[in-house]
Length: 257
Ligand SMILES: [Zn+2]
Image 1 (cartoon, protein in one colour):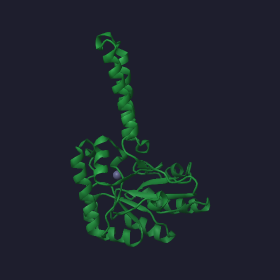
Image 2: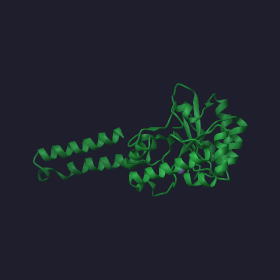
Image 3: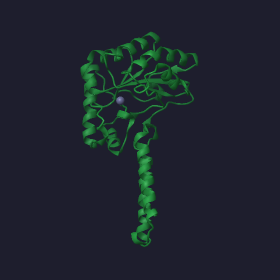
Image 4: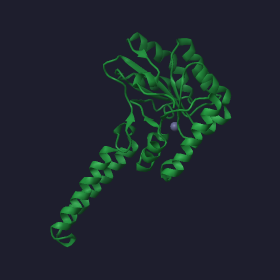
């Protein structure tokens, strides 16, 4: 958000300079267009890069001093893959984070109860997860986020504090909604693209290419390839000396209100 205001202030400053130096007519067009184009470019980059902190302060990586990483799963719960992922996590005694979609939470209360009973973290990933989510006014976003938290609370008894923006997209409206909802935005540092990469070898190669201390893996518990590579990933992480910690522990932030 800070970066957003710095850029906005810079554009405003250019406007003031133009206004106090003979006005628009005395100003070459490029001098007006260049800052506007630059600001628009920065905003677009900030909106689609969850790690940019452009609009929202987003926790996307843990401390680099501690050789720990965290596994996160978005878009569930779903009957097809969430229970299989829970089985694997239980087998290896790994605690992960699940950023759940509110309307799916309502459909799968049993899986939700299992996720928290087995010690995993549950976070808010919006109620609707609509492609139009980011085009809404902040008040509509707040209503959606509150609805997701209510669905999670009514099934698990826990009120999430952590929120992961749908599609990782942020903007000033969402920044306001997050702030007013008193949620903490969480991103990732390793994006698996498991919704696109269906080949398990390619997926494994992608996520293990460069792993650093503090990394947060983004997976989806809606993908078959994710289930297939999970045991090998956990084994490789441990072999390389990484501890797999629950997200709130990795980031040292509260999971619930
Ligand atoms: Zn999602």
